[in-house]
Length: 405
Image 1 (spheres, one colour):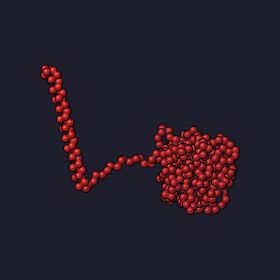
Image 2 (cartoon, helix red, strand yellow):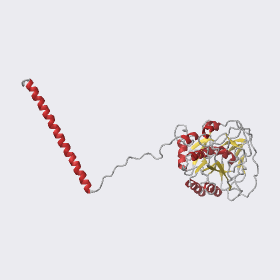
Image 3 (tube, one colour):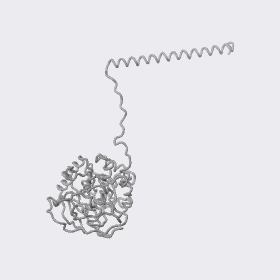
Image 4 (cartoon, helix red, strand yellow):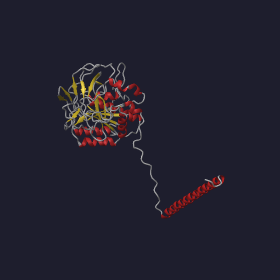
């Protein structure tokens, strides 16, 4: 798992380290012994600016329709700091699959806290930033605390087996009880355990959203990302503030949608804010919108949620699906307000089958012959009447002319 801290400033937020996606699993085996964080993430300055994503999605108008109330969203990541002022009371206990801690409320990297804040950060006085589904509940599922600093990976990460266990627990009604799972992480390995865990979550009716990965730039591998590429998973790419695909965002048929992923305002561990870059931070916009859909349209299946997200997305450049943009840019307001057409096109009108009963067939044949004979007689009668009328007219005319030409 990898979370990168990039030391550069961002508009509206002082330089506190820009988080970039994505978590990359290499499949390290075994659990890590319980221990405090090797490094403690520093709080960020409080941002009072209006994030461009808030302007884009008009969160106040959206809140009048749906807020994600009573929906549980599992964030399988580095843990979530529940003591941040905008996250307090919005984070369940969760579970720690990395170190076997009592819960998932410890975040040594800050990545999971940032992801969770995009979904559920609550409004506070003096701060414009808040989450897309502030009344939802985040279930933190801790699986890594690794980050990349100056090109070097630092911190522990779980293995793919633990990753699969985390997904299973998150979707289990007696475990995490999530209706939506956010996976802001990527592995290049098609692991059967992870694939099976994702399939089980979908079978349980849980919506699964995953980041498409950050290796899509020039000269980068753009390798197939998992879990985003698994069937039924909603794969999410990233766009910049001007709506253009971020150059790092990966491309492929696994991209269903794109959402803001560059310069995204997120909560920092402890307090304050920082800025996130990567498909890691695009994915939670889609997860939050899925939570709004689940609240507004109870009983929706994962396939129905995906269909609604895709059908209401703002069109991609060119108006067609593309590997870079998927079906378009996420539009939460349209997703919860528009009426979709039927899921299946109307079939042809069924044709009545003729009876195979010989008596019925014979009776119908006699009726058809009788109708034909009646039509012949009627036609002949009409013909005779017309001939008689013509003869009568000729005779009358001849008499008036005394049979002269």
